[in-house]
Length: 86
Image (cartoon, rainbow, N blue to C red; front, side, top):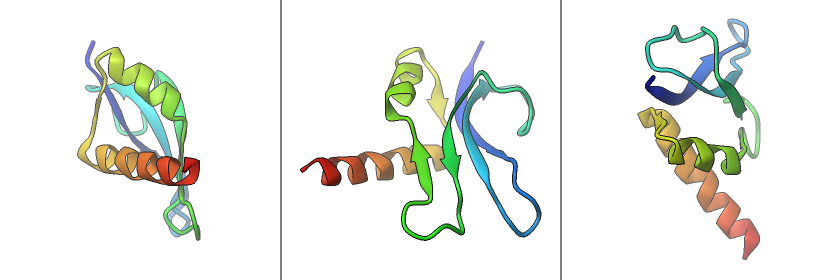
């Protein structure tokens, strides 16, 4: 079972809202997810991405691969968390 960390669209037409999920690679974009890891609201001001990095690290250790978009978002959230910690 190949797992991917990817986005699932749950918002309406002009109000995009995405969930960051772990899902099987062969499932549909909006299909069943194994776990919900956070949200992404592109129109939000400030911090549009909310991700549970502990669970992301857990799934990466189990072999889940992030999509290109999610890889970039995870890097951005890690940098923001490191800046906030220091």
